[in-house]
Image (tube, rainbow, N blue to C red):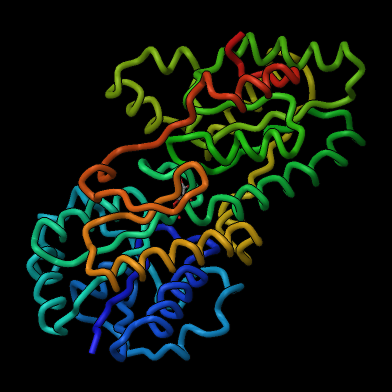
Length: 359
Ligand code: F6P
């Protein structure tokens, strides 16, 4: 008997179920031994508190197109891993205990950066862990792509498309805030796909004067409106010059709900043009996975299951230069993959005339 556990951790995305289906189908079809599946509920919380469901391959059937996660998820911050739960339970020993109690041969962990750090910690504790790169943000080091990313780009792009008509009717500037946490992958891709005039990402601190110039230039060139895509983590040059502590203090004192509102107010003030805000928010994590995500999630699931069948553990499934591969967990844990400001896509976008607020 092969006994495997699965858990989904951190913010959800559209392709978690598709990925689990890939793992389970591959193991069911290819394992020489019968397989028993343990689905932990609500991420690492299920492993800590031994909350699990004994599942069959049928439970993972028919979920390819279903967004969210059938197991539930939660955030168990890595920083607090050695702090006991409110009821005194020590997290790491509890997780190790559950794993051994169930005599698991392998634990599949579908999660982003923080969750991968925890997976690496469990590997150091001697557990057979295989991580799979989930996140809409695409910020996981060691892989070109994460599952969830292309579906989120689709949603964000649709939002930018939809805003175009109303922005045009009213001749307004629109600031559209796009998710991505500390990086700018979704805003960059959706901004290019949606024909934004300006894209502001954390990796390229912006200057309000440059944003103003891009808007005025667009209007001078005959545009009736302007679309500014701003990453939720975007930062002005002025703020980027502050110390981390000062910047945190400034953020804590912010009275508006998010950067989009501050930026819209600034743009309206300096340009005198009517400016509105649109925020697709968590819709970027909702709904069905797109076709590309379904394929990639399935490939991730197959590669993870292959590793388990070959007895190889302690890695994260990755894709590099179009090929599925395995990256040691200790190499990826704790590292952020940012947009390179000199990358081809940024350069091409600039050649199209898209402003990044830096010139
Ligand atoms: O990591 C995915 C993500 O959607 C980020 O883009 C965003 O900053 C964050 O999660 C939102 O988290 P929550 O769902 O906890 O509000």
